[in-house]
Length: 135
Length: 135
Length: 135
Image (cartoon, rainbow over the protein chains, first blue to last red):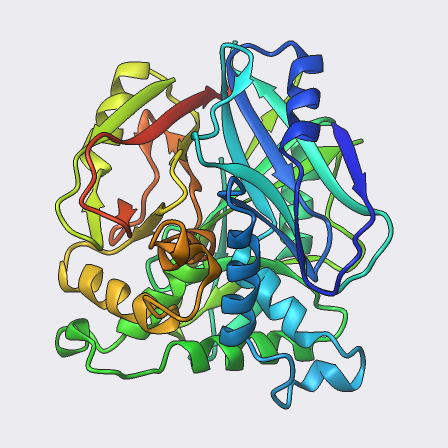
């Protein structure tokens, strides 16, 4: 198990972590298997999408924020003012996997792996990477 | 493979199954690996989110029900009046994984694993737990 | 690793790939383990839902298209007119797993595995299938 640690700078932000995860895969020397990614936070998520046009990150954030308004009489907001981030974490999800073949992640041409911050800025956000060898 | 069985009591309900899954992990004696959770139902789902404030469960249900209205001229409603539950199952998803390290699930401090009932009450809802040892 | 290849015919379309994935599982001869499915595209996704009533596929497409309008001043639309498909890919997700027991996928009675096209028609859409034996 390896842990990638990130500081985030915005309230809402998608951060490309593909190269960091690629490094973990290379170091593992696993040729065929599956790479499991996991975010141990309840107001963040993981997504796999295009980052060749970085505007897609902005489009995703805006669209998701429209679907889940920042405030809408959420009960949790009286305790910690971030219910919307929790709801969006459930929609986008905290676990993803990517197959490994020939020692590399089998991401599509237009795919990057991105950490989704929805209650930033935060220090020490974590992504857990576990790799299982097919053998 | 282990199966956790649940009866649900509400139409819409999040049920915390963290302790049940923890027991399966302990019994497996796996120290390093991944725990795979799967719901074999088309009107339910799985999510990982905060349950320290149980109001978050209510906020999630309300927000998702607003995004997917209970009735909206869905074609399936003429056969079985639960199209909204099917749509929400696709949005939230039926498969999740959580890494295992030092013999324990690597859930974050604020994370619980929850079964999402969206067409209850139902008896004998199932969650399939499979654990793969990293070795 | 096996790759299933599909041509899609519609802009938005759910295509049942359960029997194709079942064939891969049978050929693998794995009795107990997990089947990992992955879509290497940024404008498509995977979902597990009911296809006994094929109308559910239409209901899902309509509901998701209502949540994410086809055009909404997305920045990416000026480059490639498909931002909505990218956003929906993030919501539905490109990775799924299904447990294998007794040599068969443990799908529920009402569950099918479906490829979600959101920017078709396209030729050579791919689904990567990787199977890990529990041993």
